[in-house]
Image (tube, rainbow, N blue to C red; front, side, top):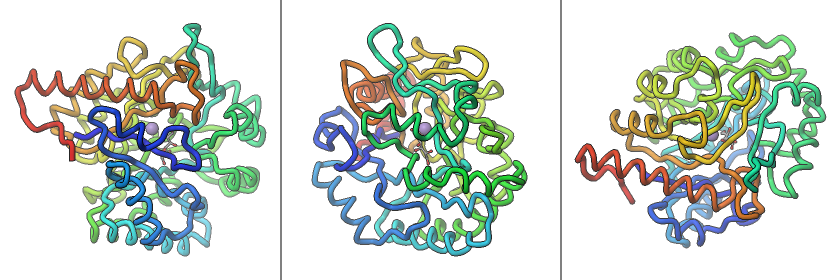
Length: 363
Ligand code: DNO
Ligand code: MN
């Protein structure tokens, strides 16, 4: 197991690589090319440059989060083949550059969705919070501006302005879309790209939908265990896998994160550790990573990953805004640093109590 940090690039991130480098045991970075639109081809030299920038700070690029999937692929419109070709070219360039982990998501129109980005918790910290009623009152077109106004000018990951200026048009692609259509379209995509993953040994790590239910009447399928199992049957390659995002999955009333690990451990290629509290039906807010602060038992999740021999990367996912830090919502240095130290601490305790050696890999 190795712990990585997400980095949004010099242009966008308030956290520098040099600061990440000072975190004990964090040796890796997960990043992307933020200037690329979904569907654009990445070149080897662009990837090399990203790798080099990270290496110059003494860190290693461990994977890409994310190579975004063009809307036509999710919606299954006629232009999808062209964009799948582009995706394959990008995967090949990444493979040639030695990248072996690629995160993506299959959420129609919106990536992760929240209602408030700085909800005060009463202890001086703020967190990201979701409220189903709140977002439905706003409606899909106002949501993007509503959120953008809460970011203090920072980038909102997954909410590219270019995409959001076309929300109405994008939603119209899904007017007749059902869960079945999304499964079929995901299967079509996987069957086309997996051979390239096989050629380069690239693990695909599909991020669960966040939140894991339909929003604005548009279906979402990466939501609960039965659907995750079904996604594996679309293409049974061992490279067809998931990002186990504890927070995204854990908020679905049907999901037990430990049971998901037990059922799918062979297909877990990356882990996001996040904790939250469900405050009411369709309402939740994020918390610090600690089990005592949220509804998820992070110890049991880590223990199950350990017991099944997980040896991939994991990162703290989201954190509170603490000590007055200004950052990309959810991605400040301070609380993610506390999260990563907590993750390391749990893993060390679990591995030492099991007397297994060499489970914490640095390089
Ligand atoms: C939010 C993240 C997501 C995730 C993408 C993966 O904080 O977990 O934006 O990176 O959904 O494609
Ligand atoms: Mn996540």
